Image (cartoon, rainbow, N blue to C red):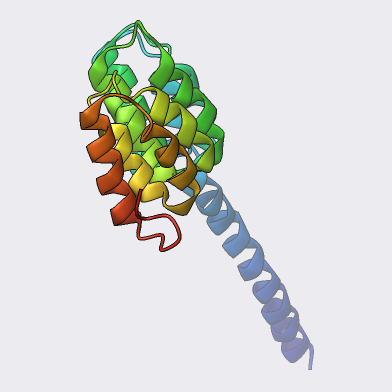
Length: 195
């Protein structure tokens, strides 16, 4: 009987010990799964402040590919980067993420007379992707600056752009007039598609 009792105790102690050993060996393994790893979006955001402009540009491109909204504010800050290739990538990334918070900063890029035309054209394309009605008036106002890309953006915005396009028809420049008519037709708003 004594032997059976000892066997039972040993089995009970053995089972508890096995659980303890399992916890001791597995818990550190579970902890190290996440140890040393950081969020890739945060890493890319940190790279937006790197000294090398190529690193900043690649980080902006990668953030656009993630479409993570946490990147919007850091990308907006990158619109002030001294290198135009970094600004271009930031503008493209903001267009890919399509967050409405980017509309006003992209409009500012569009209006910036010191900005190069390529960045301004990309800002128009980014606004096209976001499709926010707040962009209608600035796009029409910037038509001469960025080679009429804005009219294409207005076509994508659709019906909210119709009033602004009708106002653009009053512009004395015939190329603008003809292009505005074309875009109005492509919007296919039956009430206002003809000038």
